[in-house]
Image (tube, rainbow over all chains, first blue to last red; front, side):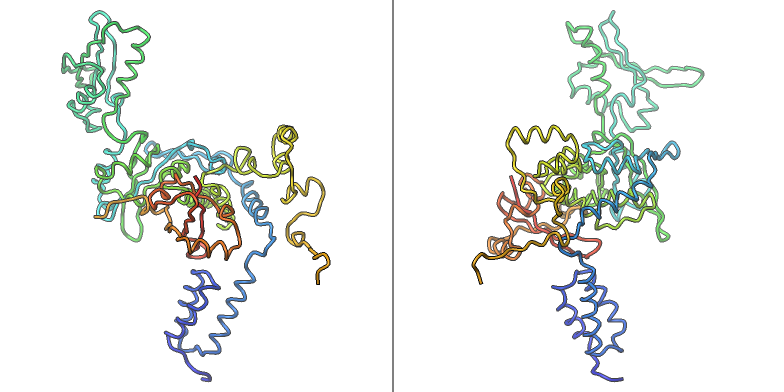
Length: 411
Length: 78
């Protein structure tokens, strides 16, 4: 074999020198692949390989003046036309209903404050994830339970001036609610002292049911209209769980011969989960996810929101079998989070805040923008693409971006 | 066990506050004004945790699906 052989160390050194030229992932791949063929490598062939890699990388880069936004818009828009217009996912009674497909994509781009189906995914830590019983226990701890969930019925007795709250013991057992918890909760919300507790057995249609009846005296001089409110207030009293998390389902995943569990939650309250970590031992706080992007922005910050937009959009598109390059999606996410807040792509966000009047007017509500701009005496320096299309001038993109300046009287 | 902060969350990339010297060097290298960078609000939960004040620049080391690791900067605005 001709040429000087090289050692692993010189190879690594040589590749590390390229780190200013190439991104991390290519450096790592280059190192991995070249180590495999180290015994065939000579100094000159290594030089040839690396310079070819650098050349091809540079060739693949976006050139200055490339219309990345337009290319991105079309690359997401065209596959979007193939998406199912309305897809709702129902699968059995224990499953949750999730907005997917085009409606969800629109929701993400519109930066809707609350998604139409808020959803959380809570992963469990290494110790707990294989234990179904513990997962179910956590699920019960998280689920938000109000008096309404354990009540059999509630009625108001005007004759005796009492609110009669009847609790279903079976429901209480199922939800792990004790009578003590109910009494504490009632006490905390100052609805009035419970006067009497009666346990009864009712047998509607032959089934036995144990009912606990609580009698709460009405506050004095209460108006009839307020009674309806009082009733609702009593039913909405929180017994346990985290607010907003309506249903918790334990999900099972089998991967590589191992079975592990995670929780899927209908409703979303990221702050609530993170505030109560002490009580919720067993969940992995680094992996608590929600599909509410605005909530992520306010709890975890703008960079987390950017990542969430990328993840959510990729998932929606992949779920529909559409292969859109992440770079386009990353561009959208970058644009939406530019100002440190999540802005929608549309009239009340990215498009509506453009500097140029003509660009804004070309998008939506043309007359309003032109009128307001003329009243204010706005100027348009015609630096963008759209405004130059509007007036029929060469657009500042690609070769149109080059400007020639001559120094007057200069050499 | 270390107490969990939002900086540990999977979605939150590493944020580093730039020193005055690094800031000057960056703006010189890119030849831009700081407000031409993307912004991060001073009220952002992560900005608050690392103690960023308006006028600072935060360096963000992102995990990128294409580049492995990519570096971005955000200008702290009120």
